[in-house]
Image 1 (cartoon, rainbow, N blue to C red):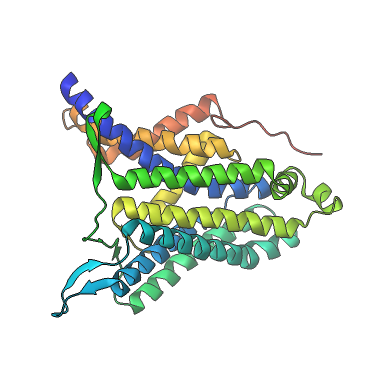
Image 2 (image 1 turned 135 degrees about the horizontal axis):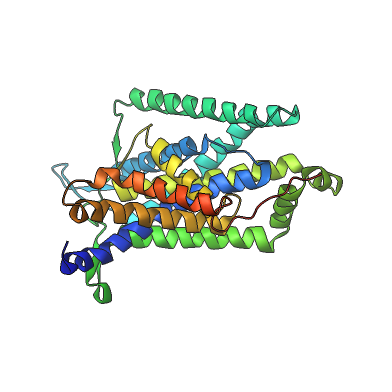
Length: 335
């Protein structure tokens, strides 16, 4: 690979990596919040992310239909709603739907086990079962409408365009700026909630010690429900952003991004909100760099399809030397 080719590909690779990493980071926040409070992995979160994406895309398709402007010949000539406005509506709808679903999953699959004092392995198995149920339920509902793979709608009259960035000498799709803006707003809101509100103090107290929190008058079950609501809402937003970035959704899109986002949470230090963000962005950059440069650097011997091996290999190396993750802390057992 020549230096000209390497540096020519570098700006867009960095942009794509950060954009992908931010999506991973938002999903990872859902994993890390639940783990921080209950110390178990909600593997159904990847399917809550998927459902949020499906809900958002379905709403966008409906908005596209009802806002179409037609001429006398019934030919679509434009849309009366701006795509960014439609996207905001879809994000809110997906967050509400996915958040409500996460609360329902907690009530049905986790709370009865928690109240009975079941071993932590049991909710983990329940989470896997709920994950499979959500996949099949979504597949069944989507099949009723006759379309399994739903493309992200194109508002052709007002398309998502690219913006030239002079100092990078590259044109960045506006959707990447949208991803950045939405993620930063959500992260800022989450940090404010956790660190500067009474509810946030209650969440941190429950994460520290549920029994003592209950004695201090905190409704532990309500706080756990709130954590699932917030995590689910974040996953729903991430589902729409993922569909925006990659163009379609289906009932199976949750598995790989969910697995990688869980990896990002572990990489950054599961239970740490900054760690989830750092892990997501770092994983996105590693994956994108590997996908861009593996083929030219190896002369085609190793192509971009091996990018996941590189990403997980880096994770293994980091965890060997820092098992708690980059920003995680070793947790001593409470007595």
